[in-house]
Structure formats: structure tokens, C-alpha cells
Length: 306
Length: 313
Image (tube, rainbow over all chains, first blue to last red):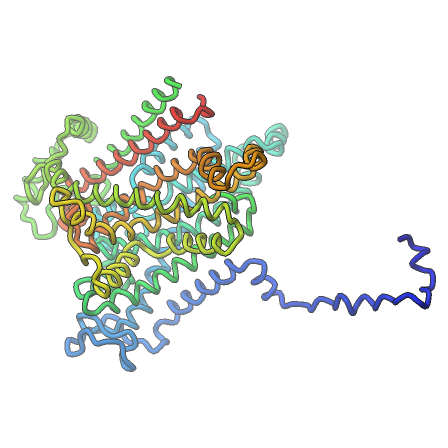
């Protein structure tokens, strides 16, 4: 077992071990992309699907679509065919074009709400976690807002304003901010107890600098994960708002609106409801997969929680 | 413990205060004249003036809030602008279908989700665990009205096993009542089941790695005894907490589910109120649902300080 024994010439009646490279062929250098896919399948699949939806939304005008708002009463409620891939709706509009352009609304709402709610929640959470007197007031307000179910809160806010994409984004953002603020505050409170924060305080670092240098970077991982979930939830809430008539105006093609328009006829023409439903579900699934993957990749400890 | 319960109950007062203030100020954070907003686009100046007076808009905000809040405490939620009926009367007429739907969904979700989570944790890493967790991801991702339409299409239109839509009051018999609620309850329960199954699996995994589970196994206790007597009992607190928090999903989802299955409940009332900008009704519904949500979670918190001897404050 020691070096001299190995170095000794092998006796002739003993089988000689084959060269190592034969037993362990050199690992084929896998592409970096494939290696990433193997390690993080959820991120890869979710990310690819989200990217696909993004491309579809961006390139909608070039993907054999027609104007999604063109009315044509002579070709109402056509079944899907070679001319109208997903059929036409009650007003003769091409559903394929409406679904592709509808992706824009869902994605814009999802991404904007995720970004705005994260930013607002981050600021509120850090302030609340660091400034004692503000904490009590801010958290009571957040608790109050959190005790209104998010869909109901967004619905109530939408009842105030005219339906527009901007107002939908604002309403859903307000409904989502309290959860982000709570998450960030929790992270900040645990970070405050860390020795390196004590060290920074002892060294005379000012509070804003501590927030920026020592606290903020450590909140980014959980915040990113939370932002993906908010994106998914925002897309669902947008579709629900549009579906019940409190979302984006009916003139804008959005998946919720297409489903709302198909509702009256769904027992005879189910495809009007089901086609946007599939697109919505796949997109939300993709974003959720991305979120699960990011959660496992960014913080293995979080993987144990819900 | 009594001190904790009292403090927990007192802590809900500021929360409900914030909710009330928010609900009341809904009208005033909108740009423009609230009376004109309520009256809508086709209103005459006389209509606007009438609404302005009925709202008492000439007096200070806090005074109006105080009066409004005091009336709410007395059970007076105001009068609908559209039907001129008291809001509370309208809510009472619509509450049975919504309450039925939510209770059936709650029972269904717990009965399905908890065993799912337990099995997933018990067989962690196996195909059945993967299947259950994949279902959980789907449950979170497929919006409630999509599930509702799929169920209605398959089980009501194609197979004709259950009614497509509508609601029958409980007073007309148990089966007619339940028959109309099965599909809506499954649709509404999907997200909820996914949520409960995930938390059950996570807490069960943690509990199953404890020493007392090894002891139970060592003394020759059966698998189901370990899972349901030792493990589930100790995993109960996080599970019950999530069931309480998940009520928010039920409330939001009920509005949409009622719309798909044409159930004349509070969801329908809310949607009608929004389309007509009937503010007192919107305020009443939001307030009621928030109160239910806060109260359920308060009850959950108080309940497990009573049943779990490990919790001492």
C-alpha cells in the first residue's frame, strides 16, 4: 500500500492492472451550456420558456400576424383552420394575432410589477429593519394591507381608476409590496446581528453606508427569488382582473381579455377560452420554474422551506 | 399564556384599523372628485351633488372616517348607490353560496393535501414524491379560472357527470347542494392543495429526522403510526398556520370561480359592484373578507397556544 511496494516490478504470475486512462476515460469536456442545464434544469427550462415568450411578444408583428384589433363581422367565430390558426372570435378578430400580442401585456405587467414591488419593498424593508421607531408604524400598515387578500386589494384599487395597463401595474404592485417588505425586513433583522455589522458600527460607519454596503447585497438573493414569484403572481392577477372586467381596457388584446370575450360562447367554442389559457399557464409555469431553480441555486437553505 | 392570547387579540386592533382606514380612503385616493367618480360619466351635476351630500364630503376627512367607522361597528355598512339597499342586506343575501364554496374547498383541500404531503415526505426522492411536487408546481401555475374551465369542459360538458354551472341552496338537500359545488371546489382548491402539500412535506421531512421518530421506529411501531401519530402531530403548527394564511387564496379565487360557474355569491356581488362603481358595496365586501381573514388567523394562533404545550409565551 505504500509507495515502494507499488514501485517494485510486478511479479510475472500476477495480472497487471490496465492503465488508468482505460478504466476512467478522460471526462469529455462538456459544453458550458449543457453543464449548466444538467446542474440547474429548472432554471434552464423555465428560462428558455420565458425567453421564448419574450421573443414571441417582441416579434409578434413579424410572426404572420394581422392587426389584432381588426373587426370583420363576416368571419365571426371561425374554428381554427389554415387561414386562422387559432380561429376567430365573436367580432371576427384573429385569435392567433390577439394571443401573440396579448403576451406583451402579460409580460409587461409581470416584469414591471416584479421590479417595482421589489424596489419599493426593498426600501421599505431596509428602513423598517434599521430604524426602530419607523418599524412599528410601517409594519402595522403592512400588516393591515396584507390582511386584505391581494386579488381583492387589486380589484378594489382598479375600481377607482380607469382600466389601463399602467393602473393595473400600480394596483398589483401595491398589493404585492407588503410581502416583499416583510421578507426584506426579516433578512435585515437577522443581518443586523451579524458580527461584521457590529464591526462596521464599531468602526464608525454611518447607518446609510452600512445599509448600502453590508445589508443590501445580502438581501439580493432572496429578493430575486421573491421577484420571480411576484412576476408569476402578477401575471395571474392581471389575467383575473381583465377576465372579470376590471383590468386592461377591452380594446387591448390581453390573455385575460380574450378569455373574458370567449366566456359567453365557451360551451360551443371552447377554443377561444382555452388557447389563451394554455399560453397563460405555460408562461406562469415557466416563471415559477425559474423561481424554484433560482431558489435552489442561490440559497440551498431556502430549498427546505416552501 | 392568557397574557399572550390577550396581546394577540389586542394586536389585531391596529391591523383592522389600518384596513378600515384604507377601505374608507379608497374613495379619496382616486384622482378627482369622489362624488363625480361614483356618479360615473353619464351623471348630471344634480346627481353629483346628491352623492356629494350623501357622502358628507363637505366635512373634514377624519370626522367622516370616525363617523363611518362608528357606524360599521354598529353593523351599518351604508347603502348601495345602485340598488339603494343596505350593503349588509345585500351581503347577507349572497353569503351562503360563497361560504358553502369556501367551506367545501377548505375540507377538500385539507383531506387531499395533508396525506399528499405526508406521503411525499415519507417517500422523499421517489417517483411518487416527484409526482406530488410536480403537481404542486402546476397547482401554483395554472390560474384558477383555467382549471375551472377545464373541469367544467371535461366533467360537465363532455362526460355530463356534474352540472355545468349554478348553485342550489343547502335547504333543498345535501346532494343537490354538493353536486353544484364539487367542480368549483376542486378548481378553487388547486392552489390551496399545492400550498398545503408543499408545507406538509417540508415540515414532515424535518420532523421525520428527529430522534423520537428513530425511537418510535426502534420500539417497533408501525409506519402509519409513526407518520400520523408522532410525526404529523408535531408538524401540525406550520401546517395549520399555512392553512390560515392560505384563506387569502380562497377569498381571491372565490371571486373568479363564482364568475366561471355562475354562482350568485359575494364574488358576483363584488364584480357587479366594480362594474357599476358601487363604492359602499366594494367597501363592505373588502372589509368583510379582510375581517374574516384576520379573524381566522387570530383563531389559528390562539388555537395552537392552547393545543401545543411547547408554545409558551
